[in-house]
Image (cartoon, rainbow over all chains, first blue to last red; front, top):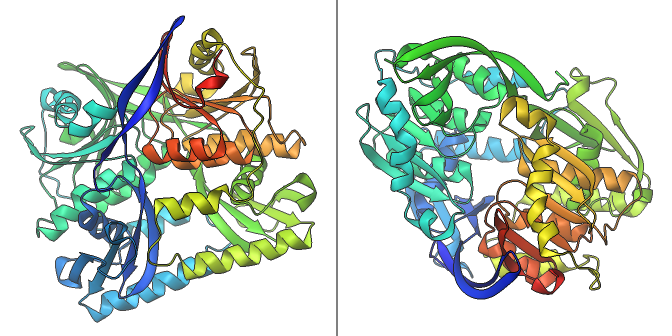
Length: 268
Length: 268
């Protein structure tokens, strides 16, 4: 249950031939996140780094803002499915208030008339300032996808996992996480940094496999990350949010070529 | 606002060179779905086919089960953001009851002890039986990704959109939808089929770009689709659900080679 991959039996069809083989696929299981003994969310995720995932998810939700907000994060001893349940105890009364407020917002859902612009305005409030004196050479940026790929242990087995890697400005790998969900991989590395008291990640580059939606930019900006590089293309809203938060957004990385969608000054 | 793509200005870095260019990216905007004048959900999506998306999303949620459950689906005339709000009026009192029940479930979140097995048991209840006398030749299956790709108008411009295509057993394209979200592209084609009274799609193949999570299998099974082919790999839970519902699940499609993870009897 807690392995990120699983053995399966498949039929491989190649032209007119077919063969029964063993193979490995990415595991996907629901993780129930409880906050102060109340259900908060259920996330489909690849097992592993569950406590980091819970911390990163609640950080992106702005429910946890600093390590002192957390008293403990543990797998839930009484739950029927101990490995798929994490209990977060909040230390800070303010964080507890935010959790109750956020539950109410979820319960009442969003109002009619929500729009991209309003969402962006709401999202930008309370985000940390991103440092300006940070730059990475184009050569190092272009090399990140290959370095990320080389660090993916489970991908080699399954071909089915997204990755998020933190790198220094020199291109050294600082941390990496894999998950079937792109968002989860980002939550895992940021949540781990939070638990290690390394936030804000003011001098780190986040490189992600796949595309960039606005939520990936939101998570990076909340962690104070100055440069986000994605193998594939961003959405229009991701670009808007990168511009508003001052984050450098790179995508469409192919060999030594890539596109800078916002904040080109940080590419030296 | 309603275009699936948007113009942006980028800096393209190629080796030591850099150039400022116009480019197009996928649009991403929140769609608020209201049910009987109450907020139900907000989905990040690529604008276009919004009413199909709302129908498909509510069908996958098991809130709408047949066309007769829906009185109307329209963009919301009074909303501040008319283009980003869809109002669904339910015709059937049973469907209205399900909507209220489902809102309560969301409000109370899930209980501790949720697990993959329980979820699958819950999901399988009430799904239509999938026909057994349906087969597609391996040659036609192998050709689907190229046909899907050829049908993607917005991808060519942006490189950032997922696609879901419905095909006949002869490989003819019946319908296609694109979206930044994999799930949304599937909801759009299934929602459109629901609105056209074509469900269950008992003799159609669904081909999707990207990977297969359990939710994609759930949506296909709810629509009665017998064969789901994905360009990339499935998760373990996706395979479990395919086996339980009797759906044929194909992945890892490369040239004339692909893997069959469940239901190989439908590949002739």
